[in-house]
Length: 379
Image (cartoon, rainbow, N blue to C red; front, side, top):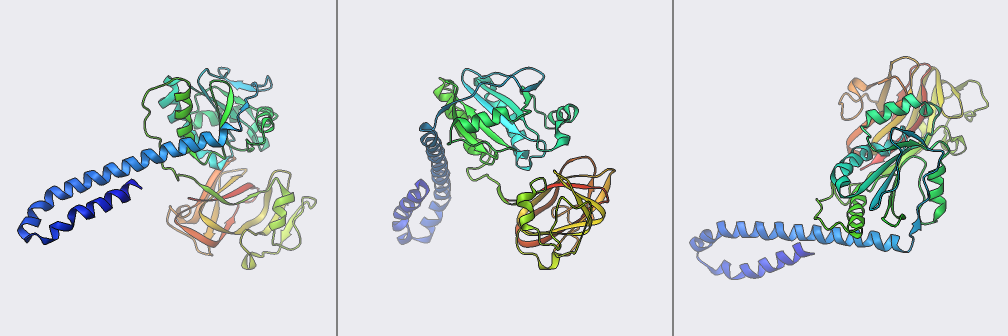
């Protein structure tokens, strides 16, 4: 808005200049360029400030009518290190999961927020939940906390008790199983929820606003990232949820957990967007599908990034192709199209510079490897 006003005003100022002699216009050019640059930079900064204020006001308008008391921290939480508690200014509950792919940015961001706003009164409590059995091992949890440099008070929500309590407290706020950021104000009211932790810019604005409400009058730094710095989930398959996942299975016969082994007819050549198929021999379990012999998995996806959660009984390589071709560039797949699979964790298969549309992804997994889930993002 202000940038457009500046451009219009500049055009009005410069109309008489075109009637001057060339030498006069040249003399004016240097100073004019400097002035124009300063005006445009100032207008752009003003636009950004106004946008920040408007975003912050919108956050409050959306949450004002939906304020609800935050639940007490349940006794069932298993703490790693110091026990956490609500603060007297702003408390951030950071729900995460070791296999949560959209949590990746949040780990770094929560550490930045702790450094930026901890001295002003922001308290961060890390709440981990488990989707898979391997995530319940205390040593594994401790290793994940160390890996992601999570130094705030951290607890394992064994029965999703805290997560469910927040979701049930108000229909306005629903916390997902994997990831969410919940901001609680000085009055212990829930004021902001970022489901899936994908709108970190707005969350930081909310932190600043709630600190202001709590009496902090300092001028805060500009939020990290951009207002539209979000990742959109464009596809996903959770192999522990077969009631939904099997609906998009394109193989024949139908995949079923009742079968001990599964030697599917590869239907990769006739897949529709979002469908998946298997080749080789597989077995199913409650949380994963397992490659028994020469197993490969295919799906059509649209997006820029593809991740899987997988593990192999011994370190081995998975072969990856896109549209039948091995991508040698590291920014597309792995080096020479190979991804080394070892312990259970997140592996990135695709990191495209430009969005891919209905691309066929095929993964050849080592024998004995388990595939827990796949997620496609676009940003």
